[in-house]
Image (cartoon, rainbow, N blue to C red; front, top):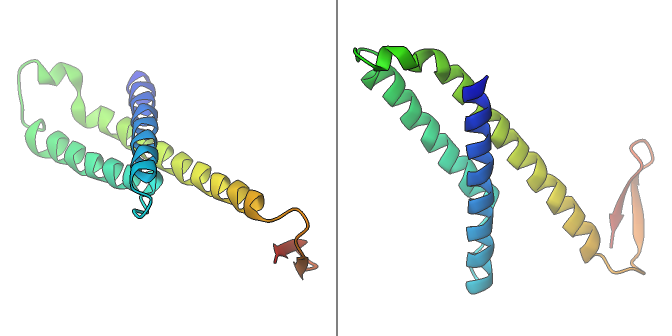
Length: 124
């Protein structure tokens, strides 16, 4: 559990840093369309691949003090932390996109009901 929590907090810190860097890049270069969530997902996927390679290729046969850390047993906790952070990043990005789309609509805009079943609307 300790490994999961530490890895999850480090992934959230990495998400915050990536979002901040992407926001700074968007301010400096408005012509670039850098999305922090996509960059974070790529970084986490790359970290997962390196983690798996180190765990099962390098430390699998390592003796000595590495046996005490049990890297293959804690790998699944780290993998779960990668997945939780990725899913949360995507969910927050979708939530932020929906909120910004509502703010962009002018206050007196025409709103069309697109489906009476789902009660969804489309601002025009």
